[in-house]
Length: 370
Image (cartoon, rainbow, N blue to C red; front, side, top):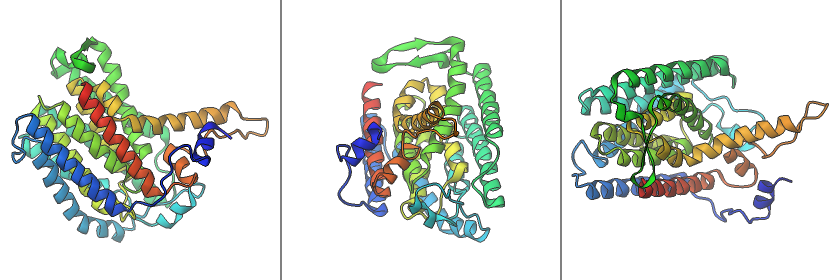
């Protein structure tokens, strides 16, 4: 028995004694992010009731997305955009088969259109929107193949990765050709700076691909990806407040995720699919590249990193212990790590609640040291 299973089974690792509800999680997260946005605007000396703030774009996009969902979700049901569930996954997920997926097609556009309009088509916002749309397109291709063939297999991993690298490279090239040299400076904790020059290009390129895949892996439980990205987006918006257009974009993105949770909280009536999850990761990385906050995003996205590392560790350990029969040992009961916790007896909503709490603590840590 590996260490992680021992901790969970021995109850040394925290296991909640009660089950949280999806509605409670949504209400708590909404109140927490609203209070945080109001506080951050107040500290910065901004009116929370102006468009170039964190609070108003957050609220408007949340309400618009929640309202739009009441017509978009039935439309997805009508075109039979049902999710196919892995048979080797947690048995509790089998009941989710048929739940509409590809929800990113209605909440991502809300954030992007609002940001474009309110920034008056600022070149930086246009570029981030273009990158976000391109990654949403990759996700849509994958989702559509899954829906079309009624299986868990979308486009090939190689094609998906190639498209991510291609679109990411185009964005990095635009940054090199149009942005000032200051963009190549990495912001470190406590006001320190590290000029990277052209090294910022491969670092940013890697971040785009890695972050989009990390948020994609995190999207495995009702409300998990949308809630944790909403927290990260708001914190990133506070970090880039010196660039109001990017700050507003982050607030719009966080608000759209929050509004999506009105339909994606447990029990979910719709899933975001790769259309949403790939776009969210790409959007966060694009903003971090333009603002020099890649290290801050690394800390903000600590949960996404853990989810990714759990998959890498699982695959590596399986291959390293593979015997002559072609069967290896598993480090976790299942990866990503949230699935391991679920198979270890955790309620789905409790996992999401703990991840929200950790995401909030990481956001507070990041805003404190950067």
